[in-house]
Image (cartoon, rainbow, N blue to C red; front, side, top):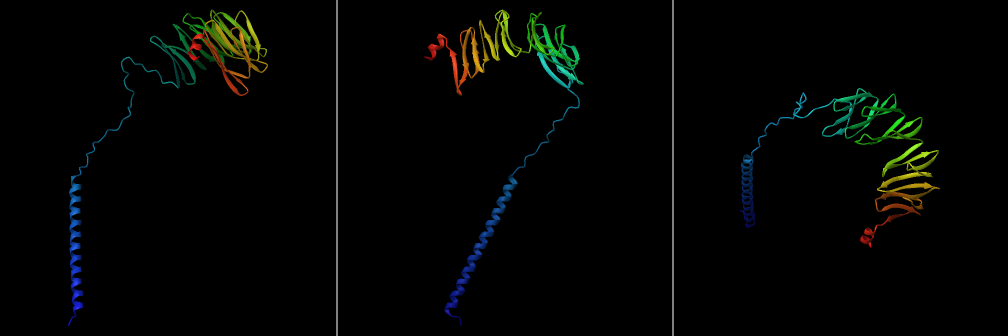
Length: 289
């Protein structure tokens, strides 16, 4: 005969088993519900239809030229130098030779050609044959020279250029020749004349055509503005500034020369400190005072 204690334990075990069965039933029901919801969700997803895209195709033949266009070439190298309403000029290389095409007029072949310039109806360019330099201005050829630098051409067919001959430098303005010089520095036009710097017998000079200034150890920043001129020069290891007839210095170093019709400025160095020296017009003085 079972005791009271055993009956209670059996009753408790039955209750626990019932609760566990209920928990398992609820869990199975929840899993089935989640599975159903997931199925319904996945069935509502619409996979977008991917339309086939045509790949970019490289044309097998060049396109037909559009109206008004023209294609030049092929060339090994090409330099477009002139382009206006009535002029088209370019220098190109083909099979190791250089040519100039100017409005369909071809010049060449040359070992090298460059520096194509135009002013009005005039044109000029530099070319080399047998390592000698030539200058062609319209239908006139100058040379041969050891080297050549073009710096001036006008619509009136006035021209100027520097050239090297017999190891000395010269420059030519129309029919006038200046030189010989060891080096030529800056050449600029000044009022109705010109100013240029040059080196001869180891010294530098500034030539105003009718007079010379120098000799100096070095010259830099030669410039003009209206009736004013200015430049830096070195003498005795120091630098000086010449502005018209006035001289400033000596300085250890000078730089950034600026000149106008009414004022000037430059930077100089002393004891590793820099200073800006400016000639102030009355208008500028009123502004900054």
